[in-house]
Length: 258
Image (cartoon, one colour):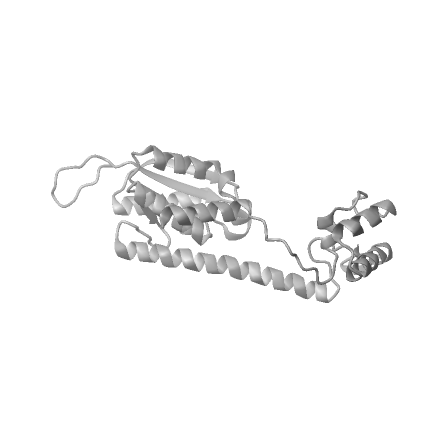
């Protein structure tokens, strides 16, 4: 379809891409299928008199790990390759719920003069009001993601406080149905470790003692300082927290856009 305005002569068709993603959970619980997204995008582009040149899909893929989404990576490659005028989505969360990811992506799209449109929420970054709408939705998506994380953590803490199983069973306990009961052998090891630590022993000294005594970990392997540290009550780390790949990349990103 060629876009026309008023009685003006037809202008060349623009190169626009639609991106749709659905995870297994989306299909099972929310009914947000690929077909549903594609149909809604089709209705939107017909109303806006936009022609979609290519559709990119990520089927059955979670939005949590960007590099694991082949369609998403292809979308970035297409943007950097040039010749893309706009990207149309069903909703912003199809890209990500992570605010940093969304804001970084918008900066990339702006650098290549690519508009971002969504059917749900009517995001259109070609206008200043549209960008404000985009930024607000990115913030709200991040808030929702953190609320879910907070509620999950609190629910697990509540279960643990009631002696219920929640996630990985901590060292010193074992599962009995839906309850946790003390593991006497592991509890004895915990007492030994904490007694030595309170007496001034270093982690390496405690590790050496446990391994020499033939006291193995739950996985029947020798102990390491990191494993011992996890069962020391009130352990104080005297070393600077090591950098992660995410923190390093975020630092580089901040410096690059400053």
